[in-house]
Image (tube, rainbow over all chains, first blue to last red; front, side):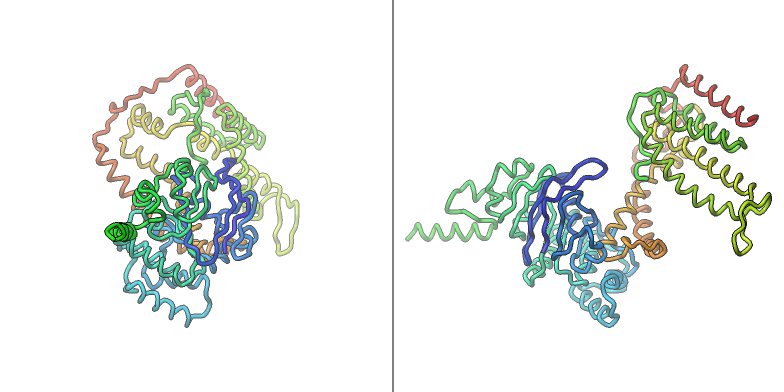
Length: 269
Length: 253
């Protein structure tokens, strides 16, 4: 779906991304992790052509981002920014969702239908003013207007910054459900617990380079890479690693409890 | 255009000068641009501006600024040159439009003035820390801090708003708004709805700014509250004298 081929990127003479190559496949839930300033957001902006690579190329469903307009790529890629206030520009929720839809759809009947559907899914009152709502609600409105366009690929740039646990879960569970239905998700974050709970694949970025790319278990076990990227594995994964082989590949508290239960039963037999 | 007003670190004579004398020199240059009537004199002033930038180590920035101004000047020049109908006709165009020698001379003078007078203030802001400028205005000119703060904040917010606008445009392009179109009229039409998010974020930012200023004792700041002393040295007096001469020359040449 998304392919980076030896991508480098520099801004005003300062190189920020060096020779990054990877491919996100359909249905992936990939997390891009790294410390602040590592180049995560730059990578996410390279995917939909807001930034164009200085060398190498980025392909989205076979289309080169250098030759395709970002506004055209918007039909395939939905992008949720960290700050919803940059996205919201209408004075009612209904108009806001409509604004996004009108950019990618022509059929008025279809637009109307999708707005109603989206309002229902999110439980919004369409006549409310987004600017008077809480930060978490505004993030949900931004997400709603992105999802209304039904993108095949969803790019999330630190989608849960500044949200409380409940708001965070509301957003992430929705994204997870979409992923189950086939949407490809690319999530930029430094919240390791979030990565642990939702992502299946992890890409580690540090100093503008791709340091690791693989499934959760193998990446979290790679202490060297995590150290180079100034990251700590999630507590539960770290604990599982320290406990050794019987606890291999555990990323959730539930799994840990199950495994302990299993081992206990095994021992008592 | 980005970062045009940001301070550039350095230790040149211009950096070490008193902020007030820099401000006065910038104003002297601007005023002399408007007083003089000679094209060559204005060209000279533009060169002086570039020379000053070179001394301050921001020659490239000055060149960039000049390029932007030249682009703007071309538009202005074209607008102006067709509207002056006095003087000898040099070129006749259809629809009773013509270009006269007076029109040409006046339009050229206008754009040269624009270039010569805009540069010094921008360059001065690149070579002076905002804090120094506001302190010296309070300390030496006795302007109440409240008013200085308004001025400084307005200048400081320009690049902030530009960044905000950039980010908003990125966010909207990502949604499918065609900002990447080549059609400039279409682009202008698309920008209008974006004033809403910009306005909302600006009002919020200003409110936070006011709140934090008040928390740090904004109202207690007086003429003698500053820690740094801003004295006048040889270079200040020399510079002021030199550019006063320029002003005098602009009237008589």
